Length: 213
Ligand code: HEC
Ligand code: HEC
Ligand code: HEC
Ligand code: HEC
Image 1 (cartoon, rainbow, N blue to C red):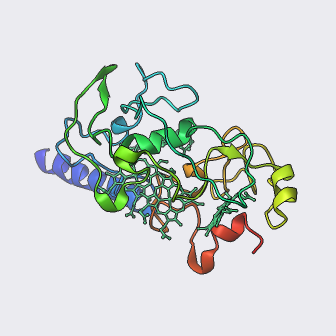
Image 2 (tube, rainbow, N blue to C red):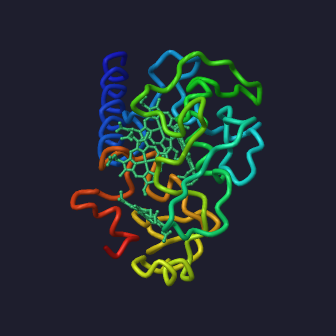
């Protein structure tokens, strides 16, 4: 009886292992902190919670402390034509809540109560300039990307819809409320192509999803 149970258990573990290996998920990527001994083994919890979420308008059930209390300097140039550029939108604010280096990676909430973390992002992955809060040397985000911009630019794909450049599939390029954000290029749960990119960027194929260059 005991032996059968052990065999059955071993089989379950193997099946579970295969399931994880065959579908690209966040498990095992640089965004999987479940094995870091940072207070939980739940992979999603560092970023999302089913209940008691932080109220970050427009963000999906957010459970991480957000960067706040300062203003980011946004991208500009003599040729940039993006309209309605604002401070980072909800989806980008989520990335910056770890990547700008002002909030610890392990500052997430337990039933709404914020835990004070002590582990910060490495220098190579710091985007948004830490104390300077600067996004001036990063690809522009949080501006409207629509057909009018495509016309004004002259060498851009005209977005198919308000929330997609190409199509609504899992491999599509999303827009957020008509705007381009960090997650237009990155898919934080899937590291198949490295750097959490939406598509393989060999021959700059990510860039040419939008730029007709
Ligand atoms: C490191 C942070 C992080 C972790 C960990 C994480 N997510 Fe997310 N998730 C995000 C961010 C940022 C967004 C918003 C950007 C976007 O939509 O891609 C998001 C969006 C989502 C969305 C809504 C948009 C969509 O893609 O459907 C769902 C659902 C979601 N996450 C589920 C999960 C689940 C389930 C887990 C755990 C298995 C998880 N996430 C772990 C960062 C994370
Ligand atoms: C909970 C904190 C957290 C959130 C939220 C988060 N990240 Fe990360 N991200 C990390 C950490 C930690 C690493 C691992 C590297 C390190 O420790 O410096 C990482 C690594 C990365 C990398 C490098 C992966 C590689 O292959 O080297 C990219 C790209 C990235 N994140 C993009 C994003 C984007 C885009 C978002 C939002 C859609 C996001 N991250 C949200 C914490 C976070
Ligand atoms: C236009 C597409 C695009 C946008 C928008 C974008 N990224 Fe990236 N990101 C990339 C590419 C491509 C790489 C891979 C590095 C390379 O090719 O040099 C990368 C790399 C990174 C890395 C790894 C460190 C590095 O620079 O190599 C991090 C972290 C990161 N991005 C976070 C972010 C965050 C946070 C945002 C929003 C503030 C963002 N990205 C917006 C395309 C983008
Ligand atoms: C999701 C669509 C999208 C992707 C993917 C994308 N871009 Fe862009 N990019 C834009 C839009 C829209 C603008 C604003 C164009 C304008 O102002 O005319 C822009 C602006 C730029 C600019 C600044 C233009 C200026 O006048 O200041 C450069 C350079 C650029 N992108 C290069 C890249 C590179 C390189 C990649 C690939 C790593 C890339 N982009 C990926 C949509 C995208």
